[in-house]
Length: 196
Image 1 (cartoon, rainbow, N blue to C red):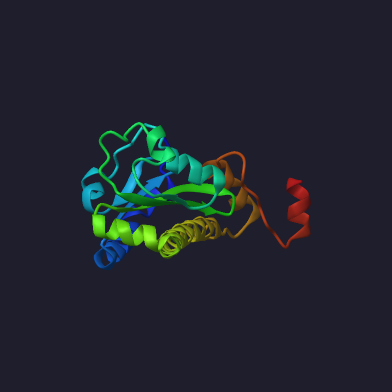
Image 2 (image 1 turned 60 degrees about the horizontal axis):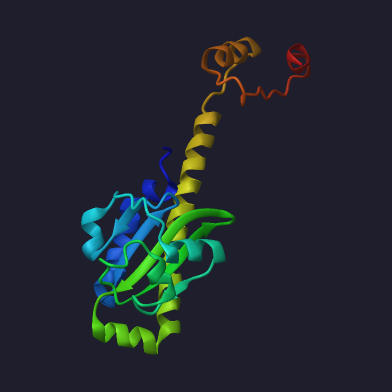
């Protein structure tokens, strides 16, 4: 299986969610598009890179609706559909889908295990949704930065293969070609006609 974008930048994502967990008294859980846990705080930290392999209703709903899902308590209709409902001890949760343009990256779950915070989440639902959306945007920006950096490395590698002559260009492509994406750029019209 190809490594996901969130998995590739998991170390930075982990630091960010630990920062937020440090002052919000909430737990954070980040799963990639394959439901592989790539970062987590609290109880989730010990099971990073564990694949849930089970459909989770809130994640599926957030992905489908492309908006945050607020799970008020474990008796909600979303939780009753979940295969882990019997063992889950969470009091409430906000699940935010993470997208770059149309590409689904995964989800961020912000969870509460404390009764006092649970009451506060119920009283100030919009605040907690906005907090989760904000943290989700931070994670998405980290993923975008990773993708841009990766694209720059590819471009840098492509531009590093400059040669002095048409013969050198043809020889280089013959030796290093992937067979589908190479090109020769030249200002010399005669050389361009030679290979066209």
